[in-house]
Length: 208
Length: 348
Image 1 (cartoon, chains in turn orange, brown):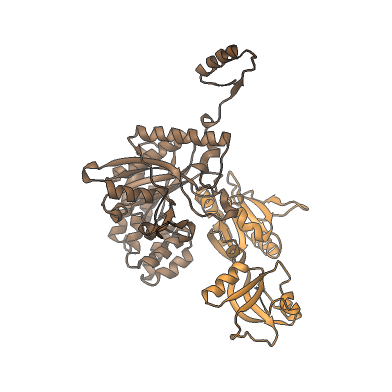
Image 2 (spheres, chains in turn yellow, orange):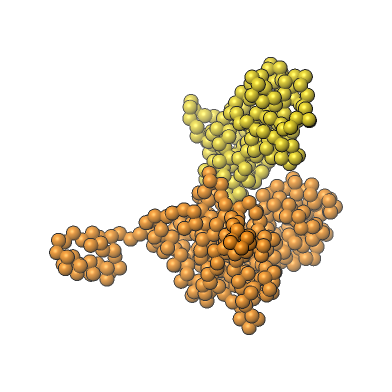
């Protein structure tokens, strides 16, 4: 039985793709939680965690401002936010990769004057190609990025690829994997310093 | 001030707190110093942690200038140029605005006003203690209750002495962001397995002097002499603090390695519930003044006053006021005078 500490720790979880994995993982560790219909705040069974549901891309903002002390988030979103956090653990689940993709059969053309890419991940994309010294033109999209090559907006996209089925369905293929994306438990640094004892406990439960 | 405007009640609070601290510092013999708002960039460039955070400008002669981004730094240059051996020790305090770039979505960090003290010309742990006790008094007079995490740059310097400066910078960032997986990999370049494990454990440590002693005892075989000295210094300071019955919480945290490159000895940061980043930081910097022409060991702290202002005690709030609505100005004036004599606010 997990002891309840005086004040629950605040944890932000992302709505969407990761939610089921997180929920199952926490259940295995005895930290079950559930959300009543349309509610966005809940507590885990042991009462040690106060859990907020937030939009994935807003999660780093909440943690950066200390509204939630802890958060679970993919390294893709963390990188885009530009904020710095403590990385307390890396999860096995939710891993994916950041890839550059284009129309099937159309190999990446190195002679091109510049690379033209559509993506949601503008910071990652510009930093990645900047470091390699490749000039890149980036067009920001907020979703359905696969459409860009299909409709002729840009020849390439940079996006997360899990199974590749979306790409396939749109006659696209991965040209190169750029980076592994992992899911992390993060903490606001000042929050960690104030609550390190209870945070250590939770981390050891999650790691155990 | 800085890049923000603060209004009536808030400005009142800010001024009260600033004055209160000025009085406190003076009563400890710390006297005020004002530093320039901008100066030549090239003097400071080696000491600036993130170039992208500072504002630079070009003067009419084409020289590159920078706006004050850290008062300690500007102060060190002034002191380095003007101090003489016979002046030491010198106790100074300052309060003023600093300008650092902040993301426009992130302007709420409130890092625009530094208030602090420096004790120059004393090398011993008594000077460290004096600064920590003055920090404790600072918290008391503001009626706030932060927790202070104390670490040691001396320890870090001893542990990674065989790495070059740019590696050391990386290691410091890994430690202060508690990124111990990366730290392990980095340490592999120069250390054997036992040392790697020891160092990773060591820099994760947060706890009491007793707990640190236990860790030291169990690491007898891997610890080097310089590390032991640095740790014992820290333990001694903590034990003195507890003998002095400080009201604030002080704790050893070896992942505190200092947020500025110039630190050399103890380093610390203070955190407070409800504030999203450190509110105070400080430590010992024995070589900084030397870089500007005059060697003198120093220790000090600097408080980001704006960060704690919504947590200040009641005595800093705007007092109640009385509106005097007497039509006869002479009567009204006399009434008001009486009220003011009693320390209250009267508005005609």
